[in-house]
Length: 216
Image 1 (cartoon, one colour):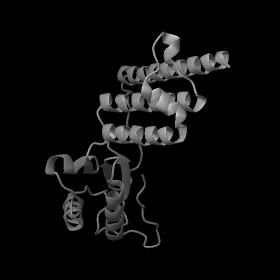
Image 2 (cartoon, helix red, strand yellow):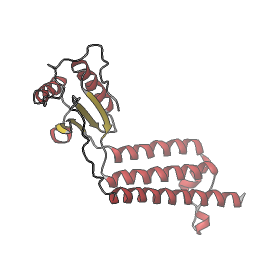
Image 3 (cartoon, helix red, strand yellow):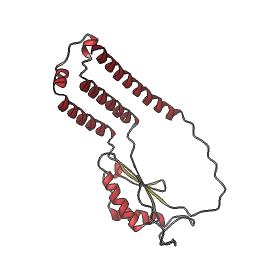
């Protein structure tokens, strides 16, 4: 039994180390990537479908995005609407991954009934004794608190909107969400300045074509 406990504990440690190493390698790889040169293809001019892109905070703003996207697509079925979460600072995303790794490592130790402290010549703290005696409640509490910390680290409070990659609204700057009529007015203004080959409300489209519904 003791050998099994040592094996499980060692496996959890190795898993945590490999996870952290993989995250560091991914970050280093992203930084070392060189931009790939792209050359425009010679094709006949095609109408450009305008794209309205939403970037929203992972905590609490998805519903606001879906409501605004629904209103916009009812008014402008020609628009291509996209929605993604707004990326947090890199250090906060990395810290959230560390919290996730530690959370699952602790859960594995509690579920397996492993007390790692004696293997390091340390006394068993009271919280570890309590965790081994109350596994269900401690695991639920750990999962809840860990998720809360992860959410706080990944939360940005952002709700950014761009039209054809041009920023048209920023909650980070205005400190509020746009009203539906405000957003429709902004779209109206930008559609008026579309190039001749671009889509606009006055252009003719097949009424039987399916609208570009929002996707995320």
